[in-house]
Length: 205
Image (cartoon, rainbow, N blue to C red; front, side):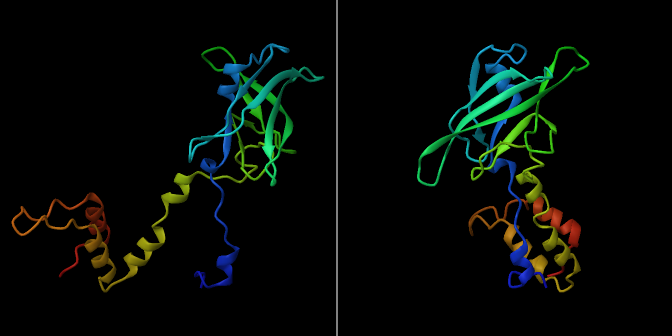
């Protein structure tokens, strides 16, 4: 049950990762725009996709103030359509501030997704989508968290297997080959092999 041939497998879709998105950071914005002063001009930041270090067209940032004197940041950037033409997106992002114990002011984005307004230091945009939002709204995970338990299922099966066949396969895969008939013999066993031996115990040949 639950294998690649089952219907449940088709319902499973791996979550998008942060590394696949284009991200803008509040620290980059503060370098190009004075957020304290309305009308201080505009600046541009370039979103970067961490997985490839690919940059897209710059996002122009203009700071304003709302009716309740809340600082607002207008994001303006081009998006290509399916025919290769670009059209411009404008999005308004509210800003928040906190005061660290060591003094000064720290700026944050408020997630512009309707009903969210979560305080975040980064906003992300999935390449196929138009607007930026926080990681939670886009249901993003980190690549490292997806890979952290990559071999849990294998380890559980190997631990319950009594014949020793699984352990033998793993041992063969991670044991270095000998350098040659006239060489010094096998190198020291890798740490990973030692870990498997510790978990599953030594197997008699």
